[in-house]
Structure formats: structure tokens, C-alpha cells
Image (cartoon, rainbow, N blue to C red; front, side, top):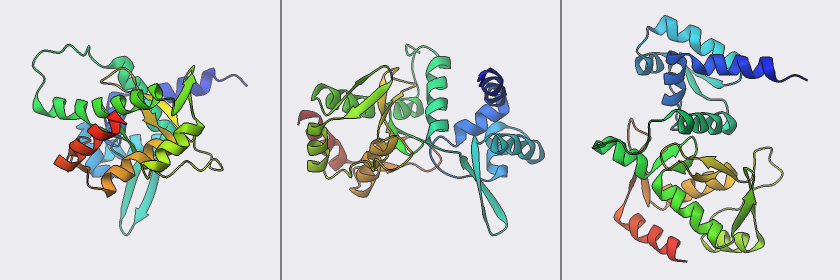
Length: 224
């Protein structure tokens, strides 16, 4: 089957500036109403509803109804992975003068759908690659036997290979321009960090706050 028409349709949907802003607003993994997404895109709620219907019809969004409200989220991890890669292609060069505090926080640690991105996440991925816990090339990563033992020692749940979602995958980081860890294992790492209160989500932002204990613990992880 010729993938051209389907690819062109998806690209056109994402390429609209308002729709791109609404999709970007969902990259933190949270669900939002049409009104909230309209505000993020700077458009009217009526216009936002029309855009959101098109995105949902294409599978880029999932909609959950709760009471009188309809909440929108990214369709799945593949959508988030594609958006993060597009951000890497389209983002301004990293040598931007005098980045503000918000930019610095996002570059340091942030959510990428349901896993962690940014400087910290890329550093961890490179450490695990260097230790041989993860191996792979050509855009595919695999968990090695030593990696299974290593992540188990860190009390990170191992991927369920019966699931359709990839066990792990490289996700190109838009700020670092190097891959961080996505897939089931990437999500498990972030869930573990949140549960231990080593990182905390910031209200209204994708940025993650590292606690004092988290700074010390992640430093130990990078040395193991």
C-alpha cells in the first residue's frame, strides 16, 4: 500500500499552527478540555473543537468523556514520539543567547508524554548504553541480559513483552538532539522517580523539578 497519501494527511494535520500548538500542549501526558487547548493555541473554542475533531478522527488524539466535560490527550506513545522528533527537526539552534529560567528548566528535565526528557534523561540513557544495559542501532534499542539485572536492581519494573507498545525505544530529544529512553521502560523509569519523590511535576508546565534527594540519587545512578 502506498503510504504517501496517509503520510501527507497526517503531516497536513500536524502542520497547521493552531493544531500544532494544541498537540504540543498535550506533550506532558495530561488530558485537557477544548477550552484549555483553545487558550493554548490562541483561538476560539468553536475553532478549537473543529480542529480537535480532525485530530481525533486521524487517531492523533483520544477523547474521554467525564461528566459534562470531554478531555483530550495524545492518541498514544507513537504520536508523542513523532511530535518530539518533529520538535528536534524544527527547534531553533541550541546556542540561543540568554535562555530564560523556564527554558533552562525544560532543557534540564521535562516530561515527554509518559517518560522523561531533557539533559538528565539523555545523560541516563547514555550511561545505560555505555554500561551495555541497552544496545541497538538504526533507531531501535534492545534491553540486554545485564540490563534486565541492572534495572531490576534499581527496582524499575521490566517491560511486558506481550504488550503491543515497544518495550523500549530511543526518542530523539528536541533540546539535546540526542535520544532519551522511551517506550514501556522509559515510562517505568519516570513512574519510579515520581513515586520516590525524586522528581515532581510542575503545575502548568512540562518541566520536572528534581528534589534534593533526587539530585543525590540520580548522581548515584549515573555512577553505577
